[in-house]
Amino acid sequence: AANAQQRVDLAISGAGVFSKTTTSASGGVSDTPTKSFAVLGSVRYHLAKRHAFEVNLGHTRNSQIFSVSPDTYRVTTGIGEFTAAYVFTPLQGKRFQPFLLAGGGALKFSVGNTYIDTIQQNLGAHSVTTLALLYGGGTDCHLWKFFALRLQYRGLVYRNPDFGVPGRFFTGTRGHLAEPAAGIVVKF
Image (cartoon, rainbow, N blue to C red; front, side, top):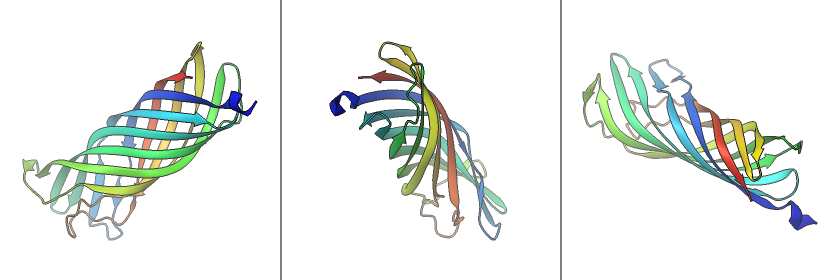
């Protein structure tokens, strides 16, 4: 009977990525990330009827725009997400299966081009990886046989990156990525 509850879901989703602006305590440095689109892949292993474990891989490209008076710095970044979460499904309806998730992992900010006041220059920025806390919720909407539509909100809290540029990009604050997402799920 216990094995009958175990199954695996594979999902691919698209998500909007909205990051909050962070500002240092002194107000001298602020980081305003641009909005972007992410692709997210998930594998969810159901341990029991209401309990599951999920592993996620995601990627987006955006820019971190730092304002340090009198200049504006743009660091183009590729952000890789590597997270795992516990998933709780309180209701098992025939059509809808709402869920809550919580976990953690890492965000890797890979540096692309860097600019000072729209002029491309080498700032000495390098890629950084930071730990992230993951939370969220959503629902799987059964479509047909083994297919479902997954609608979810995911939030990631992390240490705002400074890209190893001494004193210039350090805000000392927490960043937040909000990811409303929709995708297709195949249930095995």
